[in-house]
Amino acid sequence: MVTNPAYASEVTLQPVRRFHPDAAILFSDILMVPYALQQKLEFVDGSGPKLDPIREFNDMGKLNPKLIVERLAHATEAAKLAKKGLPDDVALIGFAGAPWTVATYMVEGGGSKDFAMAKKWAYRDPRGFNGLLTVIIETTVEFLSAQIKGGAEAIMIFDSHAGVLPPVLYDTLVVRPTQRLVKLLKAKHPKIPIIGYPRGVGENYQHYAKVTGINAIHIDEKVTPQYAYDHLSMLMPVQGNIDPAAVLAGGDSLKKAAETIMLRMCDRPFILNVGHGLHKSTPVRHVEYVADLCRRFSNLAAAAEMMAMD
Image (tube, rainbow, N blue to C red; front, side, top):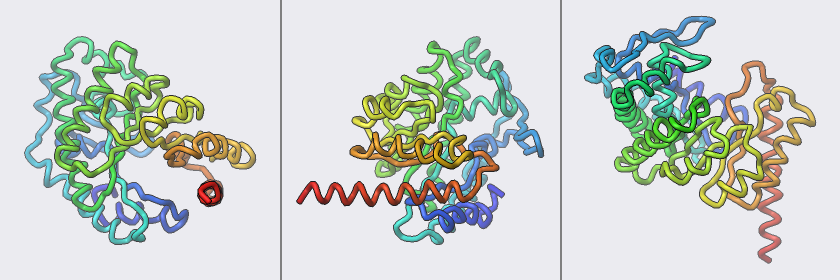
């Protein structure tokens, strides 16, 4: 489905028709980078993606970068179709996985609970692991450029596994590679804003925001609204961070979760979102409730601001 532009664009557009958000995110997969590099990849029902693992520098011969542009052309076409189907006032956001998170899948051969193989390589052969990250960074720039070519107006970089690293590896494997990726992408597309998301890094969100060169930051549900206000909102717009479980539960818990972050961030540039992906069994009506609550809150905030100016 991801490599079929018609399907990918339709999946992108469906939430827009239902919930009327301010932006749509292009339907794709962070594993399009190893796919573009021709690493053997298959999706197995019930167990997720499976890749032929790359466990050391000598295994990198399994990668073939010769057809990257051709194998990513579907992203451009999907973005074009999605952009064509969007209302004029709804932005299209492209996305990719961050270098470290993509590397974990390529090294582990799929999802992992402890990321032992990826960490082992990074500890044992830092230069070789950096070689893998470099290939991922360069391919990711092509992947994101393909989406921008098709009409993506902003980019989001997901580092879903950033929080699994100890301090000694965090800067080397999360911050610096993301900084390199952002620098290369901005050299090609200087007007495209970039949202960074280093999930689970706690107080290191501030360092990430300051160093990587991103334009906005997405925070997970474990970050307090006060921390986001005090340490992030003065640097850049903040996006987040309703607990997906609260959206699953609905009711007063969901109302409180949404209102808490909106009230704290109401005088700073802020995008309401969930902290991470929604559970597949989340009732649609709960998502509709959040979207409606956000619109009503935004209208009240705008009205209050206008009254204060009079």
